[in-house]
Length: 108
Length: 112
Image (tube, rainbow over all chains, first blue to last red; front, top):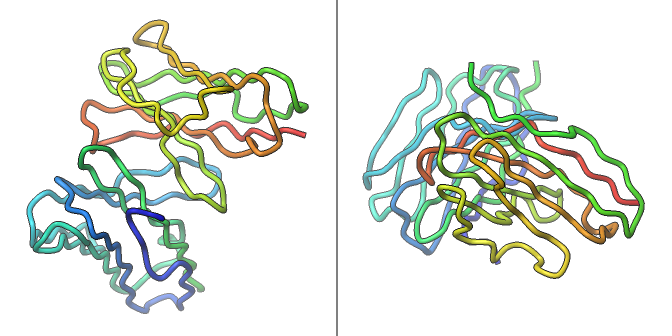
């Protein structure tokens, strides 16, 4: 059983479309991170959210931490081909857990 | 541009052989993590160290895996003996906090 479940698992969209990726858990985390991983490379940290209800924006990416600090979402506006990759959420509590991952493909 | 380095980048070996993977964390980072990534299981935490002391290795098969930090600039992950099910990409990450990790490029291990 995975502590952090991401949905959808796979997503294929046209360039210019919007999308949202979800990260859900029944556990409370002190902080939650989002990473992006490209083929053949390690994950790269995008953002850390700490406060329940917190919203952070990184250009076309919007990250939200749930009020109860159990879930998070990543919204991408006007997706570009460069957004293609594996998106991973990760939660920090007593230990550190990575989510199941969402593989995003943006088609030109 | 400080980065985590890992060697080797690729390793092909035969079942039963010893495998040693090395990681050089970013200078000044006091926390080092070892992960394994497969298509089926995703990214799994194997072990992590803080100030060179092992804090958690509960994700690591103890009978064949061992992780050490001989000094602050080197972390090693050994598998002896290796098995085909160990085939995966092994990542090292370092950071100054548990929730901010910088990953290396990974070692792709294939055990035949």
